[in-house]
Amino acid sequence: MLEQVRGFKFRLAFCLIATIGLAGHGADTMRAQRTIVEKLVLDETIQPISAGLLDRAIARANSQGASALLIEMNTPGGLVDSMRTMAGAILSSRVPVIIYVAPAGARAGSAGFFLLEAADIAAMAPGTNAGAAHVVFEGGKPDETLSQKIENDAEAFMRSYVAKRNRNTDAAIAAVASSHSYTAEEALNQHLIDVIAVDDAQLLDAIDGRQITRMDGGKQTLHTKNAIVEVVQPTLRENLLGWLVNPNIALLLLVGGALLIYLEFNTPGTIVPGALGTLMVLLGIFALDLLPIRFTAVLLLFAAFALMLLEAKFGGHGVLALVGIVCLIFGTLTLVAAPIPELRIHPWVAIGVSVGFGGITVFLVRLAWRARRLKARLGADALVGSAASAMEALAPQGHVLVEGEIWNAVASEPVPAGARLRVVGHEQYLLRVAPLEQSRPPQTAA
Image 1 (cartoon, rainbow, N blue to C red):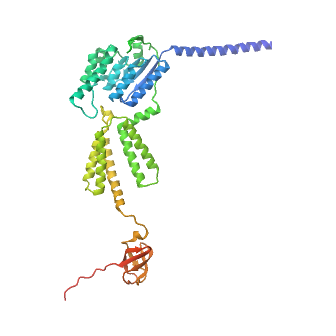
Image 2: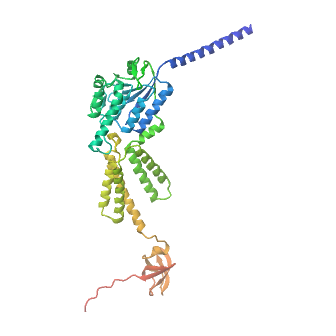
Image 3: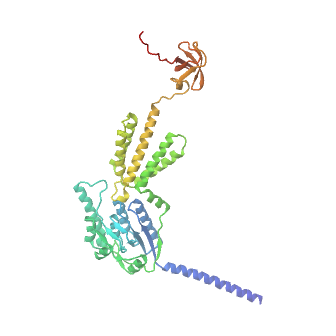
């Protein structure tokens, strides 16, 4: 009887374990059968950091076996080189790329419009707009011939993939040639986008079963209904670089680091200000290296420092310092040759930083120059020219009180005790003193 009970318990436990295992395997199978769509939120300017983020998202979508990569985009535009890199990554992606301009109020401006048209599926939310993709020249407008070449190159790049996406080439070129911009409804009517959707779920349901033509001419059917959407989160490195690529932050890091280095030179041995300042300056230079820089602006910055040094050396009654600060303002304002305002240094930041930093620089350099001109004096050297008083009669040698210290001194002529003297020189530790000249009363005629 006991053996039968034990056998029953064993069979019951085995059935429970098998049931749990089958249930878990069934859940994994169901999840594997469900469609996965990777999602990347691109709510920033188009620059090298966003290009790197897109490359990682495409690589992850490929490794995860995702059915598509959904990019929710809201951008004012950005750098042409970064845009070309990102468009190339989208066009060559093995995973279909869906670009969705959202939420309401978002835009795909300038470089963002190129990316929108490069996607396998282009979508917009109601209340969004796209276009205004005319080339804005970095560093000023070039001559007419070069300008025409650059504009023609941008239009040809747009034509190279818009036609293959079965979209309206003329409407797309109008956005590049004449900065035309379209609402979501206008873009759909002009066949610049494929669908308008209020959210991700509606978008994925709307394109489910749609056949797309890849850049190699192959056909592919999308399966996106009820897909599991997995969001690609930026890494700590990408968040840090995205913060650093802001030119205003880069300028503040440069100026703050320079001031800390000034502090280290003023109080040697503190170490912390110098180390922190060096780190900030290096981070600022690294951030600016990611952006297009005008070399004429860099020359203005060097000219500003030169004028401030000349002001400290020659004392130009503030004129040289003022001209140097003006050069500093113009240099910082024009330092970043970005095609959109979001990638340029804000005017008030440039003015505030330039005036503050310029004033501090002139003040500190002037102090340093004066200190350099003063002859270093220690011991008896430092007492030459100081007032002294005779502690006893000097005939001609005795003791005198100078700066609260008692010194041996020799006078050029005998002086009584208590006489007021002045140190005129020294021989090692023996001071040479002379009586202070007494003013004589004016003589009147008898």
